Length: 346
Image (cartoon, rainbow, N blue to C red):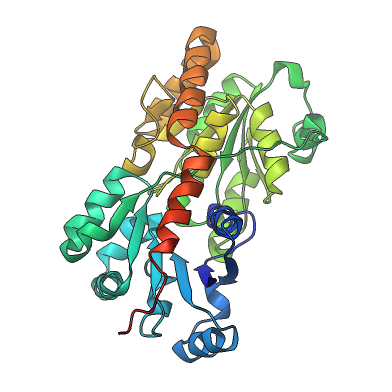
C-alpha cells in the first residue's frame, strides 16, 4: 500500500524517533510510507490534494488530535497512535476531546503505549474500546563509538576530571510540560555541598519564550548545565557515559529516554507520574521521586550504594528486553496496517 504517515517531526524529539521507527517497520513489509510533518499539511484541502496527487491508499497518524483530525473525511482508511499529549493534556479541553472522539469513530485502530493509556482512552470514548490496542515502544540503542565523553563535558562547561564526576542527564524538549527546571534549585544546593555532581539538561528549544526562561535560570545556577539537542547516536553515547538519567515531566506518554537508559544499563530517577510509573517500578527498575527534596535523597543514596545501582541496572535491562522488543513492535504494526486494506466507503 501507499501510506501517508502524519506526525509532529521536530528534530531529535521522541515523536520524530518513534515515527521514523514505525515508518521503517511498515516499509520493511513492502509498503511505501510517506512520512510528513503535520505542520506541512495543515488544511483539509492540502491533505485531499496530497492524497490524490500521491495516489495514497491509507494513512496513519501519531497523536490523535494533532495528526488524526487531519485525516477525517478523506475516504481513506487510517489508524492512530496515541501521544502522551492526547491523554494528558488535550483530553481535558472540551473541544479537542470532542474532535478526538470523532476521529476515533472513523479510525480503524488506535495504539496506546501502556495499559493505563488504553484504560483512560476507553473511559473517555467507550465507543472505541474494541479498536484500542496496547503496544509498548520498541527500543534499539546505538551509541556512537567515536563519541568523546571528555569533549561532551568540556562543551557542558564542566572542567573537572571525568573519573570523579557524577553526571545526571535530563533529556527533554524545552517546554513547560517537561518541567526541566523542577529539580534545578535542589540539585544546585547539593552541588554546592558536593562539587563533583552535575545536572546536564539536553534537548531541543521547542518553546522560544520558555527556552529563554530556562537559559536565564541555568546561567545563574551552579552545578546545572544546558546543551542543545544531539544526534541520536551521540545522545545514546552520552546516556551510556553518565551516572544516571532523569525525568522531571509533569506528564508523559512513554519516555524514550528512560527506556534507552535502561537498555544502556544506566540508572533512572523519574518523577512519580502515571506515565513514568507505568515503566519505572520504584527500587526495582529505577527510582521514583515525588518532590525535589526526595529526588536529592534518592540520588545521594544511589551514589553511595553501588549494590542498589547494580540491581536497578540489571532489572531495567531485563525489563526492556521483556517488554519493549523492537521485533514485537514491528510485528504489531505490520499486522495492524493490514486492517487498512480496502476503502472505508462502500
